[in-house]
Length: 215
Image (cartoon, rainbow, N blue to C red; front, side):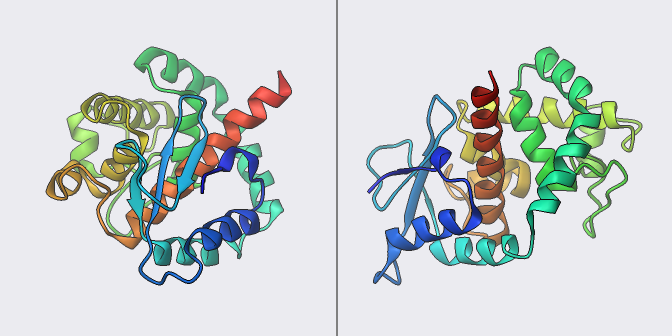
């Protein structure tokens, strides 16, 4: 059973689709990948090497967190995103990373708050930890342009390392390259990381779909 999530527009539709895959199978896995058109394809089996596994229990937890957000939250994100459109588009072209991917990462990481600081010390729009900021020469970590450029350069390195596999790239951005390597180039079985990958990809494909519909 395959479901292209590009056609799903609500949180409840996504959740019901996922539940439909695993109904009656408490130990079932969900497999997913992003195709060349930006669609997130999910299946109840690993049909080929593109599909990566996700734990349905983690996605249920993700749905519960989504259910607390309303359409007003999405509108606020759109308003904040417009403030950084020009910077993001310029950096995406400069670095060679899809602008929609940068938007999706920023929305999940910081909700477009340039002063965001996590309890683990991640900072700014793309939530760079100090080591990553230093690695990419980001001296002004709360400066939007510097922060986005550092995060974009890191994403580009990860995309190259994982052969443009978005799932592994995002897993590495969230959990670290070492964690993905530890689990033999699969998404680590961490609930936060698995939820993060799905959420970023869902935002990414919705942005692509919206752009196509507006053109």
